[in-house]
Image 1 (cartoon, rainbow over the protein chains, first blue to last red):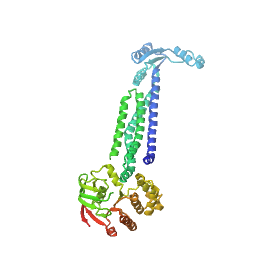
Image 2 (image 1 turned 60 degrees about the horizontal axis):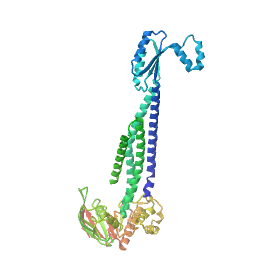
Image 3 (image 1 turned 30 degrees about the horizontal axis):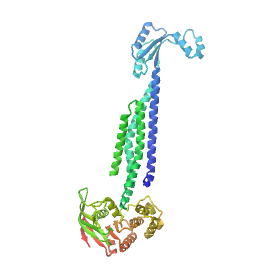
Length: 265
Length: 221
């Protein structure tokens, strides 16, 4: 019986490498996804926009610009920062360079409209709408926001999710034929042994038990990987675990059915 | 004791269509040397497979020592097989194991404690002592055939079944094999051998010949 296990060692190594690599890839994907999700949340929590204005902007125009922001439900606060206040804020934030400001008569900073957004504003297209609206006004010199970096993170997160999903689906589709080829490989190679044992007048029941045990090991390994992946996915996507466990059990059942089919033949 | 082999109106169909044996009846007595001759696909291998219970007849009876194979238990069938030595057409040797291991395999299965002595004496008997540690795949076809015969004989069976043992062999190897089987038969072993090589038949003058064509016995003498 140990003969089969001994001879199947190279198959075990091959499968172990495949499954280990899969585990490493899935872990990396899930870790990256979780990291970027967290980063994105943090970015959105302190989301803001600054609309820089010309010095000669009229009060009526400021009112229009301000009203547009105030009427939008995703905006929590709108404040006009005067040139003097911008100077004061700079001095507070960068005290080392406060002396430089003495070189300028008045304030070198433009007045600006500071817009703070509600927490967890996920509609990035809202920001695009703001930028586009303000860019039509000649008194607006520049629009800055911290969504540029958030947008990059958001795109990266979406790409990672798509990549991970495709990879995992491919793994689910591939692992059954992969395990099956492993089972078939052992069985075809050792079918002579199965036959000869009975020809020499002995039952090959023990041999079959060994064979099933040999097949069960990669099955268990794959199930553990699946459980880990499903659990992590469920955590990342904030969905309950039990449906994915059922899905995993379904794949396990499929694999067992395929293995039994090989033995039956 | 597994000595008498009886076929009574045996019919075998493969896939419920192809008629491999059609109403075949014959008896092999203890110590007989029987040649099953006929063209490829005539049904010779089917007869041998029926004897060691690898397949069962669709109609009729195959009896070993009066026991119908269809009705005996799996355990009893396996016990009967311990009385038989089989040389397969494709030899069925374990290619990735040594000559010694191939011979030791059936002895181990039998649980014989005198494994070493038995293997060594069998190796000597078939002239393969010097090849003992070599892998089967490194042997010539003639040497592999000797090993297959040795493996079939190592547990001292009462019946030897050989399926086309002379295929792809040189004349010297054929001469050696038929001589060896003749010797075993003279010592009381029942031999049932399938072949399409008619030249070997006169080498065993006392042998019976069953000629099979298209699943029927066309000649018996």
